[in-house]
Length: 382
Ligand SMILES: *[C@@H]1O[C@H](CO)[C@@H](O)[C@H](O)[C@H]1NC(C)=O
Ligand SMILES: *[C@@H]1O[C@H](CO)[C@@H](O)[C@H](O)[C@H]1NC(C)=O
Image (cartoon, helix red, strand yellow):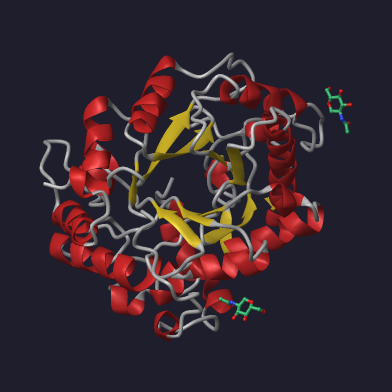
């Protein structure tokens, strides 16, 4: 989850990122051209499995054929199957003909999957992969739409791949090789279920990641230090397990608006090209043929550590990003901005599309208006 660390991280990666891009990238984008407005790319992210009111809001916003990311936090070695509320939300979205993307994660605050390996070196995840299969095999599936499974979240941040048991400090290359091993076990086990409508992809990486982690036995350690981009983490995954990307059906990306690669987030659209098009660099570091799901992106109106903006700016910049970038790039299947509704990330930090009191923010009404203007699922329009 986008949160706190990479706001700090961003200062340290400028030597890697500064050369990469200018905002001109949008004007000179390598889009294959045909804007696919018949193909619904509108969407939204939820920070839980959601409730019926939130799923209805997601449908009002994105319409049938649109995309919803659900965060399913609660998988560890003891998990026997999906929680009933997860199953209900997936069935509701499938009934609305929406595309369902699931972030499959450990319980909140328990992102120490490395402790759940079968071996002491944290490269064998047979038992944990079996727990993922117990969940995935019991999820409702639709014969006409894939279920998109994002395995974990931002493991290039220390608190997202931490040592529950204290050990030696970990370099990013070690973490990347452990994460790649974990992903390969889970992806292979999910593919062995034998359903081509189960699509699996590795965790999106934070654009600005950790150079090393203190591994002190908690989520935050004194030895944690920033200093890489997610691209270096990807390269380290490839170096450890060259076949890892052949087990990916899609690229999940957190291409947040930024004027640098891994730093200077939340700037106006006119400066945000390097961050918004970051997925193109990720494709070049993984597999250029992968379809892209943007499972987090967007502006926050007032988050500590980021430049603020008005709710009207946030709405206008998001609409422009759909018009000039996301709808125009055929590599992108769906865009699920961070996030619909939450007391902390929404009301407090300003990422919300809808406040917890039910008030729809300008970004909600203006993105919905854009979709409706484009005649995408008009039956769900006001
Ligand atoms: C991984 O662990 C499982 C379960 O302990 C074991 O059966 C398997 O042989 C191990 N695989 C490797 C490659 O060591
Ligand atoms: C990705 O690689 C292709 C082929 O080498 C190149 O044309 C393109 O500019 C690269 N994209 C980015 C964003 O660097």
